[in-house]
Length: 157
Image (cartoon, rainbow, N blue to C red; front, top):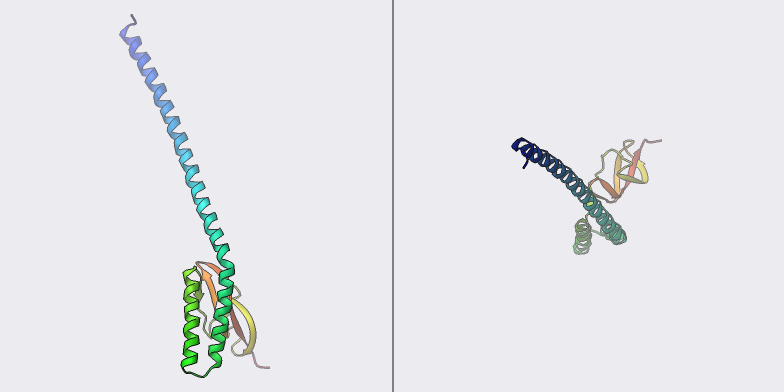
């Protein structure tokens, strides 16, 4: 039979070894969990990107419809027909919003910003400012989906 001191020493040594192995196993499990979390996040980003890509042709058609209806409404005198076209344009903008495309607010007097605005012409007005809005722009979060078509002011010649 082993002396009590040797038995205690063997037991302590075995316990230390097991504790070390459990610690290493815990580190490996934590590392696997990190990898799983990262892969899940990448998968979610990929799925979101694919959805946004699939919505692009739908949005493009809705942009054109919105522009056409808005343009036709502007040609009409105030009345029922104009109000109807304005309501249709508003509904198209709401459908775009439900796809994640929110309007970029642009009004005459805003500074021209090439990141948000697409030049659609020039007219007399303060240089470097928006003097007219031809078509609305849309964004999804910080990403510009379509720049607003604007008329930019220029000095008189």
